Image (cartoon, rainbow, N blue to C red; front, side, top):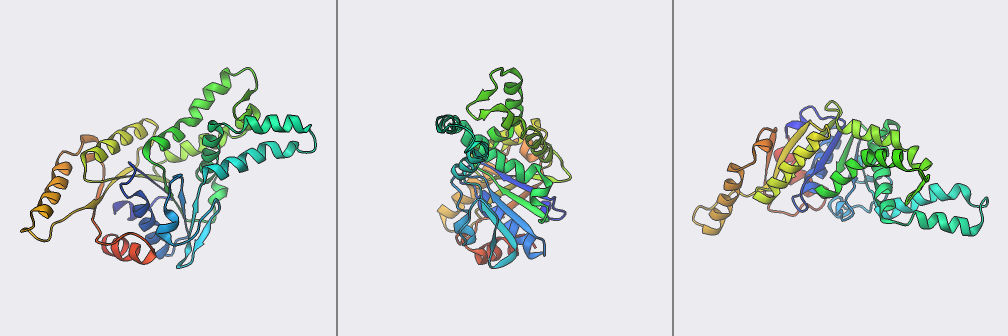
Length: 297
């Protein structure tokens, strides 16, 4: 993987659901940690299976992976993030305001947009606040499926306009003052994503037309947001070892046909092809053996 020749501090993996983002992100994190770097691996996917892949129970705060003492991982749980965000907003008023007023504030922080902004709040802190991850050499983000990720990335500009036009001083997030205090952090997170010297965006896809089209759309939309340092990983490419097996030959040809028709935008990016592994990517041993050792040395 060429992006590991001179890795940036932030490595951001995204792509259509089911293409193997977590496997590739984990293998990258293991490779960097095995090279002596202190690495933080973060999942922003509500349906993440990072725990299973790494074989360790994770939460909203960094947890060391026992087999690799320089590798830490965490899951950004939207529900838990929303609860912590709500308490940060309401907590300072406990004992100062009547119970009815506190309940009213809590209700304001119970909407779906609070869930969204709370998750982005955590994500932004890790990406946009250098002090939050200062102890780590690299931060690897294993993101949610593409649409969710893009929505998060556009939140800062969307809320900019809303807060400029809102005259009530409140929103479903509660008092706008609390959100305004986070504006700079959100802007810094988007700025960090667009800094090619510090961030690499890795698009993960399969050798399938739908996955490649999705990656192409994502690439273009992220480029419009200023994220230009992109790399394409085509994961799980099947290679037949028996030319007499018609099913295997057909499966290989299907992948080759998809890669021959790869969209022009993707074709212009640096690329890595990762062969299909015969084993499941569960556990540090399998990650190292099947991906890191074989294809990343």
